[in-house]
Image (tube, rainbow, N blue to C red):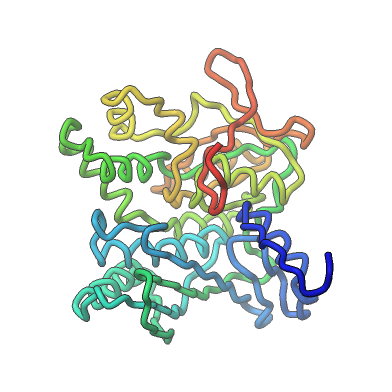
Length: 346
């Protein structure tokens, strides 16, 4: 092309492809960086007794939340949980939080205080301290960015790259509730769903839980090989573990833990509860692996806790890819149905 000519910029088409390219271009890490771009948090070797975890998440109005269906408190709460869940996925303890916010002229001081109240409600059980941040005006909606630090014992952080062929796949809690709750908000279907089920699903969407205690317990027991939090959905987040560990996986469709409320929602609107569980995002449950030889011991230990963990599949060789096995025993490729920024609808 001649010098000075114009060239049309190509739009970003893959969130994770962009991340991989940025990771490749990143400067050579300092010796203190145990783990940089590519996992739920960065891991920094700060002392001989504890390493520091650092994570950040950005929420944009119209992309991550809708002010027509969520209160400012709920938005703040979910924003904090997204970061707390990253610390949980590494098996860490959250410590300090910084908040940056861009505020449009349509927001009042009272509403911004409500936003921060939600963040602090989510963080209070873990004694997280708000230590700083930044504020700005915005001409295009509300933007909220949280940076959270935490700590973990040296060399003990749970990584996405630790899965081995033969490992069993486990997940905490139930899957698909947040997605069903979001669908209720956007479609107003809750008018025909039993009130108790609707309340449960809406609460799971607006006020999810970060599995901090579960992550810490997994680190203490030393039984988990790899882990990730389910923020984008099971099919997408499982792919991260498989790509980073260079393995495949087989999911047992009939084993997916689905709440009674989500099953009722699916039945009421003639939807597949399995599909909701596979594609639903923002459940913030933990997906992790346990070596096959340790499965019996893990099952015995977890029964002594208040945690709900379900085995949903097995890690397989990479050449097998990601597969879904039905209750009838047939298998098929696991479809990518999780959310990804910039991806065009097929």
